[in-house]
Amino acid sequence: MSRRSNFFAAVALACMAQATLVQAETMSYADAITKLADDCGADIGKFCKGLNLGGGRIADCLEQNAAKVSPTCKASVAGVVQSITQRERAQGAYSDVCAGDIAMRCKGVKGDGYKLACLNKAQKRVSDKCNQAIIDAGWR
Image 1 (cartoon, one colour):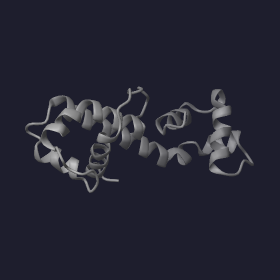
Image 2 (cartoon, rainbow, N blue to C red; image 1 turned 30 degrees about the horizontal axis):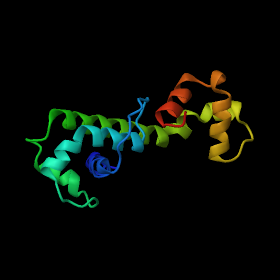
Image 3 (cartoon, one colour; image 1 turned 60 degrees about the horizontal axis):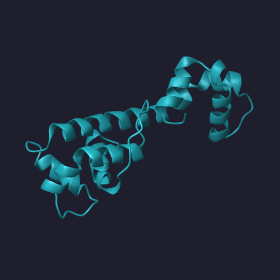
Image 4 (cartoon, helix red, strand yellow; image 1 turned 135 degrees about the horizontal axis):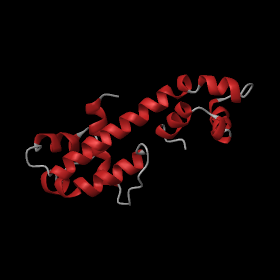
């Protein structure tokens, strides 16, 4: 997913949630929505009032009004995009990063979910890189 697509998806979803952000290594989509709702809600209400969600309308509106959007919102969008991008990369790289640990610790285990459960159970004996990939992917 491109950086612009991530931005559009995150901003479009920002209007849908109001909860407290939980800090993690990477941000979940739910936390991203909350963060953007908290930090960009006023800007969306001010500059994008009446726009329907979907189709990137909110993101386009914020982009068109970038000069007027608050620094807090701009920083939040940048942070959310970076965190979600990191999470997506970690999820995509997990099987390669953890291949040695899977072969050593989870020999004979079939199915991705069972392999992940095996690695989580053997967390203390799994490599730091694999553990970090699991954390960054949002699976621990």
